[in-house]
Length: 391
Image (cartoon, rainbow, N blue to C red; front, top):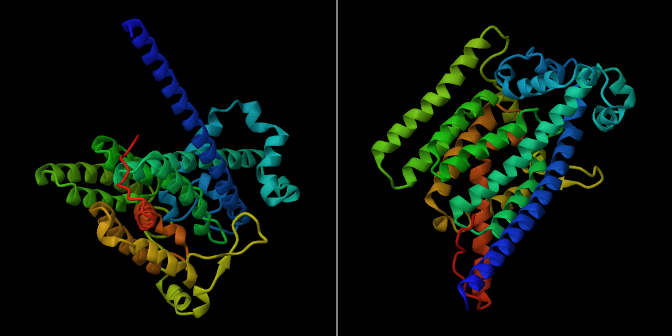
């Protein structure tokens, strides 16, 4: 074969590979987009029921106006993004948005009559908030995929499947009131932080940590992932101290500035709910609850349902000794901290407040699934080795 023929064959192979990559990325992007859309829809159906209640201290309008008490006043990034996006839009568009946009926005979730009671600008900002939620969740799913590939050294197919399963289960973390508008940006920043750590991008992880704390001050606890990473990566202890110091400074600056800026707001650093939670968690009914996600006619077990908890605990602990040290360390540290926070400061079964541990839980359960599949293949005589990571 001549050199020209070889070059032509190589070029055709490269084009075929590129086309395959583009097609694969496009179909996964579509899948992540469809899933993100469904998740945000499930969230808005719950959250919208209380978001426009003026009696609630952290209503949507008060949040955007920074008129909420502490600790909600500390979560400044997402309201700023919504307000800034609205300011960049043409004034005539803001004052008179397309009717179809409003119909698909607030009207769809709270009804036409209730929507008419709200200022048009507030309705438009609801649409902007929903679209930003979608963007953050879509990005978070891609980052969770990267975390699985980097931390577990698995191939794209397994990482894609794990990420899709994570998204399908996410609506189970929404309580009756849904949550807060910064929940999906919080998912994004925590995923971005862990992704940067497992990729060894320490400058970017420190930068992301800064943004994560501006989004929600309690993301200071993401440093637990850094500590686990530094203790399990087998690298220089001296360099580890430098990195920890750099990340600590990056975290302390926004944390202290936001605390200082919001010091005159009513409320406190945390909400103490231990007594109410003791009453809740000592009732048998708290462990047999069910909930809905999108279709209101179908019930699913709550994450606190004893049947769900048993299966969940099994998948967390399955093949514990085989799990990578980073996964074990992050699961124990973030899990313990999250459970304590849930019991003392959160309200009843606000499972979304365990989001600090979501990346660790995701990695642990993904590892358990893969080990289970591998064990099944071995039993059937199909001996397989762990797949190589393909990015």
